[in-house]
Image 1 (cartoon, rainbow, N blue to C red):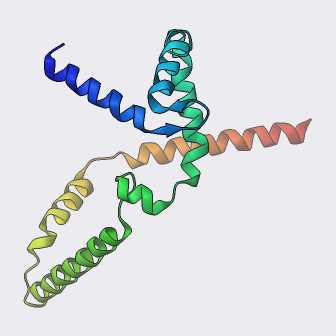
Image 2: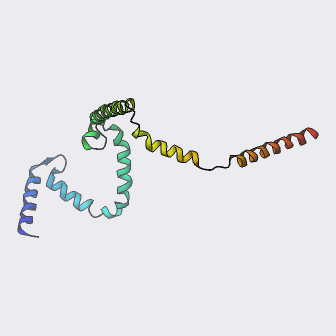
Image 3: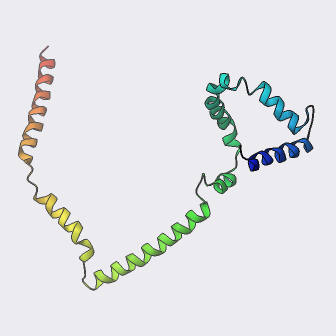
Length: 152
């Protein structure tokens, strides 16, 4: 380690010695205790980290308020959503007013794409007679089954 990193660690250690903690004395003793007791066994419990995080989140998440979730960016801001909806309503009102004025003047250019789709769909050749014949045959089969039931 470099001299600067060592001096930072020493500074952190000095700061921890000044923070009092109940039972253990100060934060430096608590950190040393945790490193000695838990640090050696941490790899044994490594597999429990993910389930512990999921379980903790399961219990803690409902207690976190919506304001906190919005401030953390986990939920969208309802005020922003409301402002966006109002802006979209204004824009759609302007567009619909423009479209109506165009239609009053006889300009139906906004409907051309819809007309093209409808005309293409109407010109597609579908053999409706075959479909009708198949349905009639199915109906005839049902009638035959009823006749057989009546004979028995």
